[in-house]
Length: 422
Image (cartoon, rainbow, N blue to C red; front, side, top):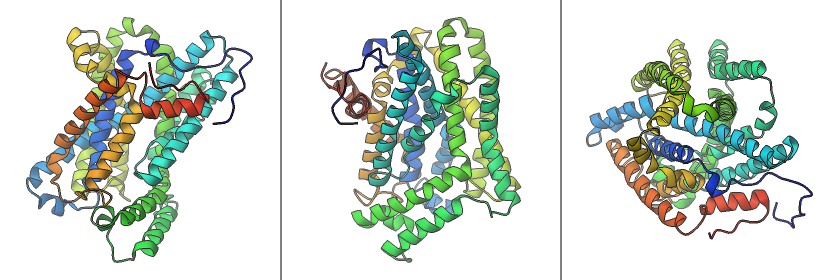
């Protein structure tokens, strides 16, 4: 990827010039990063390393539990779903522009897969050396399939979308029916536990390693968690979820986005129906999670929770997208959403720097505040980080065409032409 580049003989896919970017998509992408930050902060506040009684013993613990319920109801899963659909929409737009420049579908598929392989590498570095909660690696791996799936006929694609949508429920049902014997997380969890205990000893708790030890302790915690993560993804059907959202987004980008100006009624219908179904399903999910402090139960209640999550997440994410498209039509909506545009233009940089900031504040590599700061402060911390990032992005984009991480991604993908300056 970094060797000498042979000039192409004909038209090839290229990056989206700054002048061709769609501000609405950048705005939604930036707003999605705000939701992703809120969800990720639950991990850095050690929500999953403390039980409900420990959290409630903190100052304003009762209010913290309400904050968690609200995040699980309105945020959890919804904004990574929006972000996933945006990747599919971006794929469709890039494919259309590539065809308009005269590049063949094979040329574009080669370019896009190269782009995804670079994302996999960036994600692995992020996962191992910064934070195991990385989503980029999974995005890159599943994105490799998009060029092939996008060529499917309408009926086959619709059937595929439906099948992928149901995978999480089917996986959970199979695990429950076999009493956990086919739980794909088990071997990964055993390997992660063995690695952690071998490196740090069996007496050290996850929270102690994550936040209250040395920098080496954090890396033990992080790598052992990274080992478990693929099993957790398979247990939850996450690869199928992401691929479902990618393919759905590609369809939206190719078939809906060009007609968006004439779809006011359809957008309102999506807001109402998607919002109603999504809010109801997500409420059930959040209620079960609040009562059990778990996201995966080996029981009928667990199946209900997974079903509620499945039926709640994607419809509510679609409702959020439709609401943003409607709001963009009004000056107040463009003003409000426009605030997020700089974040969306530097989405990869923003996502990675959010992890760096959270690691520096909450883990053993930094201040070690995980488990010590009341959960009620999650929204305030998210707001402070996001505001700082937004104005930092605005300053950077006043001097450069793209963010530093975007520059690296582009440079490794295209092999050149990665100048940061305008």
